[in-house]
Image (cartoon, rainbow, N blue to C red; front, side):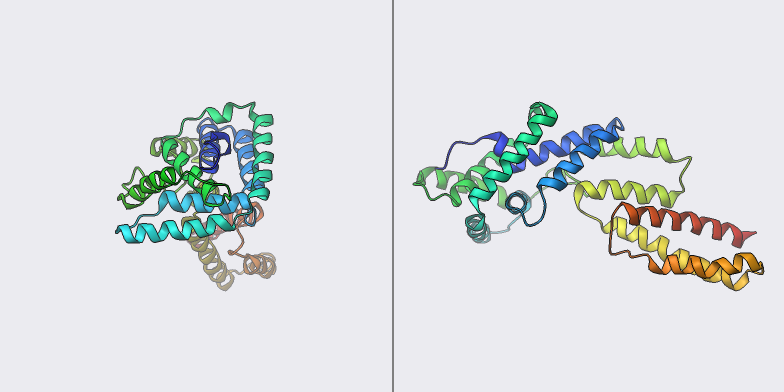
Length: 282
């Protein structure tokens, strides 16, 4: 087969260790540590890089579930094709840069996080390496590892095996994070603002922005309706003169772009929304 497994060059293991470092930092509210991990992930796992392509392939093999052996073997065949298209030289260089930065930033400590799926990750990385390798291979070992992977793909993934909606972190850790967040911000933020920030932080981890987009859409729609209602009832000339300016800001909000600036805008809209609703009750 290809060269023996090296955990520091295992895409799945490295990514999982980065997530665990981020989770650990979030539990103790260490925002600089969280930001450091986030920047490393954004910098090295960018769409278009070979590392990102391998990571997506790796994730697909970890998460995919097939109901028949025939389907599982088809998945493996497609995975082989994708692996063969990854530029090995570019990938090697990208991993070298990532490992160098991790060694500089963490002095090797990041690699000490224990990963429950370590053996499976080692099997996948070894196969992916071999599928794109042009060197002579140990056919018997390839068959053995591929059969192990097929067995995994055929397993019905239970809730503890599937990634949580908010990322690959333990459910207990997630609950602790949510509790600490609520305790810290519940008295200074509205319910909508707390939810927006919470979902934005956790969606950055998981890549799943569905819930975040739902909250943003609710706040945005409500702000527009409340502003229209207020405009129809307002008899204060000064406030009336400001309504078109506010309305234009609301109209310019682009919910299709999710970044720090847009989150700040929707938080302001949420605050405006609350004030308009209070005025309506007076």
